Length: 335
Image 1 (tube, rainbow, N blue to C red):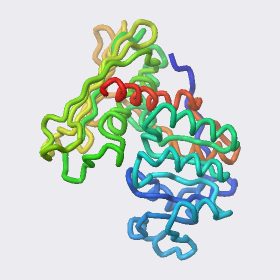
Image 2: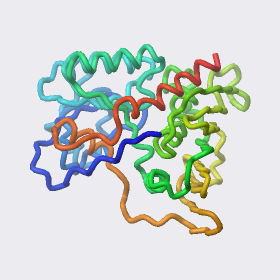
Image 3: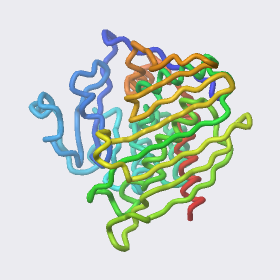
Image 4: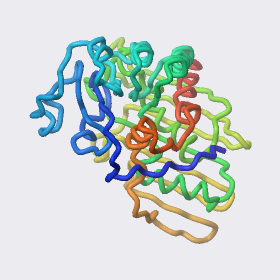
């Protein structure tokens, strides 16, 4: 079972100098909205990121430089951390390596790489450069998953025996038919569910089998995979299943329809409708919806704190990137 404890939050009143951040690309979930008032970060430059997407106060900040290429960010001595949402996900591993080799820390959209060899090359470049590399792996630290994580780690539902996770997005015409653009269904969508298994339920994956289908793709001859199923063997004899698809009907009212159920020897904890509905049952007692006051862990804050030496990450690098490694293996199993 994963043993890492969540890192303490860095105080918003910290006198530490903000990390100087650059944004590269907008193909995914860039962090621009988090930078408007973040006490630990200051946006200094962008490349291939539309200025109009920035929060209004940052749009009006003319000290933020707009450059044309990643190379311009690499040559900028003021840039310390580059956040990658590369225009083509297939290029992102190579771009991460270039950033690290240029002496920049990297925070990368998932999947950070599309092959194990590329993932290993990123990690090698980080070690050789002495710079930090992290994926945007905050899934399990958003509520209610953070609360579920604590319930499991405290042993309240006993020994975990089975985990079922679902991740469903709606189809829209903007979905890339070429998986090299965003990583494809398993590597960019099912990775969230894989994080549920390893980071929330706290069990390491030991093997994976996967199938996927393009059935339902409205584009004739398109390469978009519409649904995938993953079967997992987990440590300690536990088992898990993952379903991922682009079939979420808009009528659900939830963009990312997520379900997570963790079954233990003493009880069960679940989340449905993308975290809107939760339940904890232990033995014969139904505790109903989960109760929590804390907002979860600010993962970006943890990364910035590590850069400044005032905090530690909640995971080892191996633990953080393990779900990515397993979805890469799952995709390989489909080929």
